[in-house]
Length: 282
Image (cartoon, rainbow, N blue to C red; front, side, top):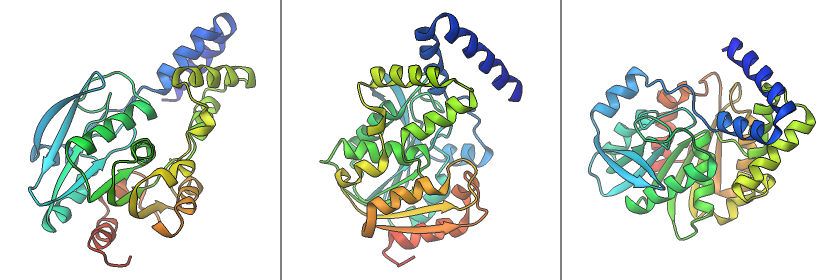
């Protein structure tokens, strides 16, 4: 990995010097491309028990999974480089209390098609699945999936969800971009070029893509938010900013040493989520 990073740093330094517009485009392609698509054993085992179908959404074949057949509906939304089995550790508890549980492989993830994705593209997929599967009772999201789902709901105020669980959440897209450009060691000038390219691509001001700014437009009754204070992937302050913006609608739980990915299969967190879903104070 370190060798690959060194290669990209030199590649972009050279490319920006001779073709800055093309360099910005290539940087965006790298930024928007999931690299590690490994499916873990427990995810494979969970997906093997699901009913599977494929939906054509925004030009991509999106693979959707279903467990259970209860009267209430839940959607599991994985994070960056995850898959439809990433949050399957929650399905058995939900099925036991009367849920039909859906998940999916996002664009460019798992079995779904596409080579790259982004907040806007992924959020469109989330919104369409919620509509088509009539998800009304519960959405559980992780990391990048939390941010994209919040953005999706803010753009679809007709969608109403009773409860939502955020298992960590980025806040500002600009923070994520800065982490990438810092890793690639972009100069200030090349950073601004990259931002300009992305704003032209999205036809949006990057500063406007911020979860804490869109919460008032999200039609969700109650939130449970969970974050490991030692999380090395998403700083806890990002999630705190989202929780603060949600105010009294959100219950925020801080965990210790459950990890960014391991938390998805942590039985204590599964129990907290189950209590929240049935209305027990957590």
